[in-house]
Image 1: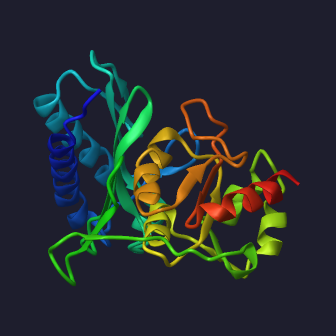
Image 2: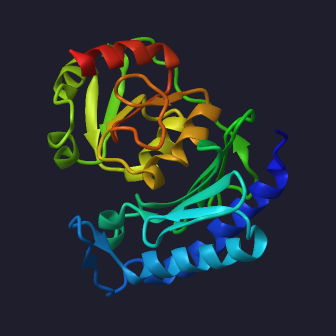
Length: 265
């Protein structure tokens, strides 16, 4: 099937633009956060941003399904589905750190074909499209998008490993992440989706996380892989609906087998 990538990319940019318009006024403001049933925080900014993106999709692509973190699944009549996470990294957002982002993806038959990581405060945006190089724009530097390439560290001993939180890994279905940590050069914490953008830009080599939902990882796959990396679960398998929630991203695909072996050991 031939996809109208240019039209869908235009939609993805438009969604990121309207979400950013909603989110920016709330950043470092006095808004509070509520706890959802899983104890994760949510703010009025999350919910308003998802609502405006859903409204735009209802107008532009009424036959497409929409899955959002805040308001669940709206069934469509086509084979396309948009997946939205208005603020990935709400803890960072409510504590004034600009390491959160808006995640937008489009899947066809369950496979992500377009992904956007947008940082609405710093003006950074990554966009990945199947079969095309990942592009990046930093509004503070230039308005044009430029292609990105991941860093090709040759071995785990040279690699920088990242994860959003220790708490996440302590709940991992496979507890052997410490084996991977022992093999890499260094480990850093924090970042949420922003870390995957940094991996695509060549600043991080490996990310290992778990308890990830489809709205957490769908947008990341085209971004990382379009820059030359790979994204799988901890077993080295392609991510899919129903996966165990583990995510492993590597900048150099040659590191994947060694990383998976550590996580399986």
